[in-house]
Image (cartoon, rainbow, N blue to C red):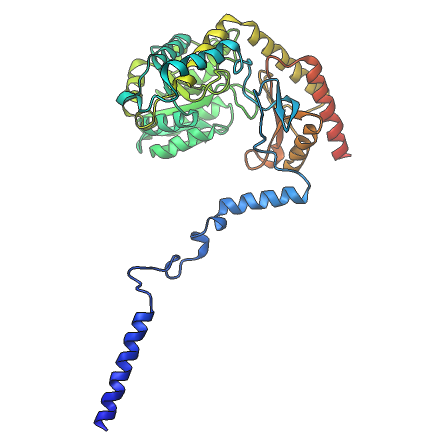
Length: 440
């Protein structure tokens, strides 16, 4: 009996050892999802962002509306462009003064590429500094009539890095409710308290500052020079008065207003007749009229020196390629040498606004300089009209919910100095026809 029990015990121990050998070593090969982890948190196709994208695409397919994004332009995008082998009227690019294909601008890029190569191969503080960087920054500072300027390799990163560095948890950032995403992300990175005020409403800002200024150390107000969704501009003088009275900084994002607003293209300050030094931080991008890529900050020497040495997006990023800096430097010069380009832009933009209003289109509060929206009130209608206009060889992008409220879905027209009145008439006639076909 004792021998039988011993034999049984040995058999059970052997079976247990065999089971351990057959079972994976959990300390070495854990379950991919981990114990009890829902696959929604381990798979990209279950991510809410991908699910939203999938739903949008499926909705477009059911309605017979192709994806309006990522159209391939097969050459320079100016007043016209080539898409799918066909020339189209183009109202979807920021090349406002047609400088991206100007011979002087293109040649400047070629010359810089030949002289400095395709990359500066290091961050500028380390060994990426080139004379062309300094020339571009000097030209920007002189144009703004401020002490210094610094250029970043990304326009979005310019705001993110500048705001993320300058502000901290004891500070407050106040911004227009329509401000660009880069300002919001910069505020989040900084840890500062963030509040928005009603669009282009100085009184709303004044009330917020009166209520909250004493609770914070540094306070920064951020507005835009020309709002790219609506084509309207703020009253800069009023914002300057308010920020001065409450001892706050004011930052103006001139991504769309520099080289567009004002008789000489000097931006919002010229448009509103306000001295440049009344604004603490000027920001802009080089990817619109400046025909390059990246962004810049212009202001007092102390501000710029801090950003050069401490802003992460500058300090830890490779320097701007010379063939990107060169065209922007040339575009600044051409803008000043050929003022008729700006005058043509103002004239054709005003004509577009006037004719759109005459046909009863809702253009919102656009001032009719470079950017004119036509608000249609439905994302489905906006996407459908954009696709229909492409069949007329007209390229214009729809702006859909959630980028704007559903009732504010729109077609957004970017004007170019080379557009003609005949082209504008053709576009508005085609839009009128297609809209009536979808709403009657």
